[in-house]
Length: 123
Image (cartoon, rainbow, N blue to C red; front, side, top):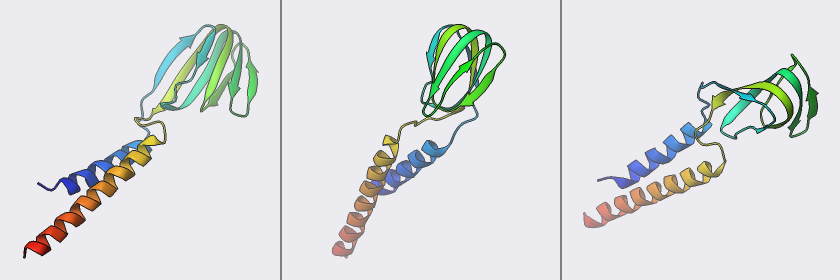
């Protein structure tokens, strides 16, 4: 069994799946406080009624009735009713998967090199 090839393939698959944003859209209604989850790439906030303050990385903005904004990472605080629509679902949303996949690929390469050396020594 060629375990090295399997490990290399799994490492490459993890790298590819980590870079892809799947076209999954979901909506929810917020009444007072909400922080966006990291596994979605963007979110559109639409205020139905009330007032909300949106805190993002470099932005603080007040939204009132009928206003909307699109952001990547945000916290929504206020009173009223707001609809948040998320898009771009990511399976691996932190950067730790890159380190893990690199380790798996390197381990697979080492196993394949050891297999080739062993086959040459037997002959």
